[in-house]
Length: 181
Image 1 (cartoon, rainbow, N blue to C red):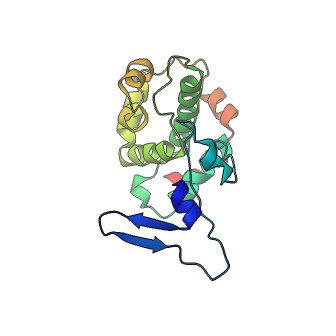
Image 2: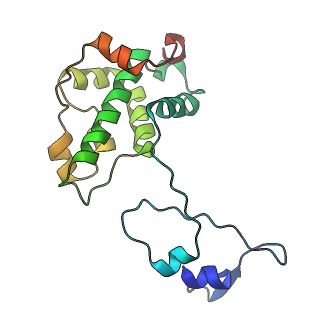
Image 3: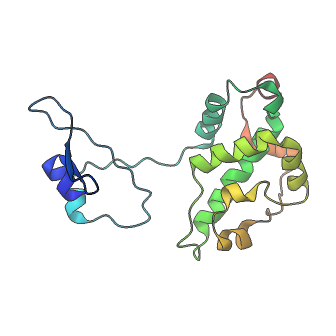
């Protein structure tokens, strides 16, 4: 990438072509490169970059992402407010447990994309979601747990100490049942 950034063109080996950035003369293109911080980037590369850290969304933002993403979907696939609140609580707790697990060095941390994918799976089969929760299991674990270590460690949900009413108070989500039924 260093050469491509420096020369402002990409070389495609298979076609033996140099593809220049399409910009106005005298301008430099703005290139966004994302990193999941799984490995250290070289200093020479970082010297050519401006760094912007994007923190993991707070609970309210995770809720808003789902509301925005699924606003146009058929009513028959929608969740109840309580199901969404429960899913959000378990997702946040699972992410926290993964973050605190010191042995979990090389496995993928769940992120916003898994949150969206998980809600998609839950919305497709809310009955299975509830059944798995009632049995103390993470519903649709294949969406969240991307390694054998994670499946062995996090497949069963920790025993919830809060009652459902306490959970509702803790989450304090502003969702109308009409939005999700």
